[in-house]
Length: 61
Image 1 (cartoon, one colour):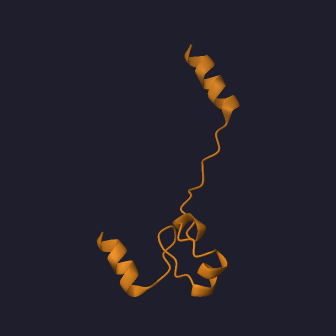
Image 2 (cartoon, helix red, strand yellow):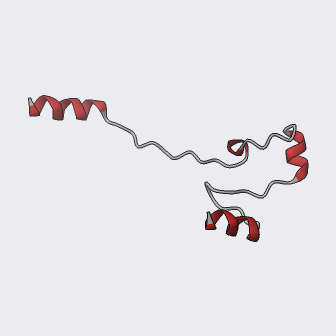
């Protein structure tokens, strides 16, 4: 909770947490306050080498 309050007080953009958005951008989005519209909270997924995993599984059997 303290992080949210501090971010609000300092009004700074924080990667994957907060972004200061202009009123014009909010209006352009029909005043939609849905956070993912303005803050990207996604994380990159690690690529999985399925062939290597299958080889490892075969070796274990």
